Length: 101
Image (cartoon, rainbow, N blue to C red):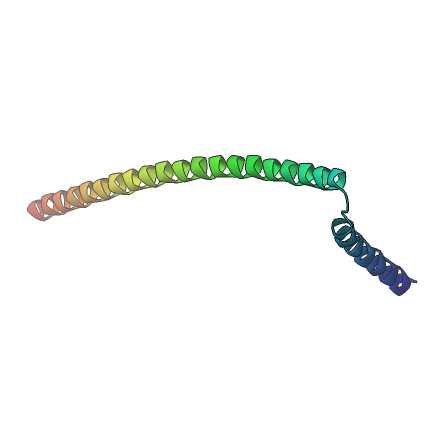
């Protein structure tokens, strides 16, 4: 029964694909062509709006990434400065210890 249901679903999917193609192929009047053109233009506008939103989101993400890279570089520089300072302090302490010894 599972295989039968699967085959029935495949047939329905194939029919839907054929119907869409037949629907476009069967446009015979100017009115049908106008309706199809309106639909396609609506889809185009929707796609353009979505593209614009995605472009804006991408630009924001890129700006955020750039900011995070700057912060990361500053933190690395700060860490390097602290490490150099600590190394200097270790040297001073070792020299003081050697002098005491």
